[in-house]
Image (cartoon, helix red, strand yellow):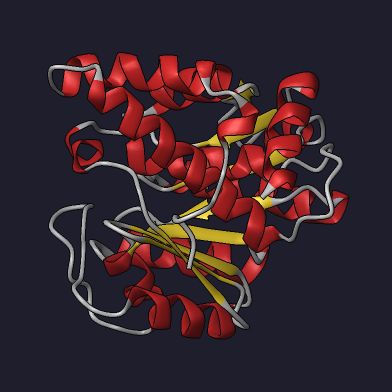
Length: 265
């Protein structure tokens, strides 16, 4: 899809500002990943500046990986201001069913902010759809039809749904894109799932000139991550060198290489 190549070129030209209120464990990796891919990260977390900070952003990424009440307050304030200004909001409901705190946080964010995209693993999305929590700690993966889950969850929640896993799924409630690629070593580096959400935020940036739908932008971001993961794995010895190589490949990827042939169905 040539439009994705043009989109990546536009990202690298404009360096969109992606505001994160996110996971403290993975923050450094997310910031470096966005820089390597061509964007500009901002990590302003305090509720007293949340509304002001997001006004300068091209997209807002919310991640409840290390959730606490003040952080949720900041997310709601920033999210509502972003939607008021037409700034895309992407939510990562990390470990959504692990505790009542996380459950209430996600419910509040979905209800008060109405994220444009919700990106999580199958266990997280299944829980938001109404299922029981099937995760291990804050991680989780279910065996089943992720395409169908994404489709029905998108209809129920009113957001584009992204399910990451061995094969990613993206749905707007009308159709679903299944995305192949990547490498299992991604699961051995903390932050790669969170980075999927950040990269979607970059591809969703409001300053970009594109006619692509939200669904196609999200699929494009996951395609980029998959290609770069495959290339990084080929030159790395294990998770440590893979993380460094992944940042290199995000930086080095030629926009012309962002092709979907054989990856989308």
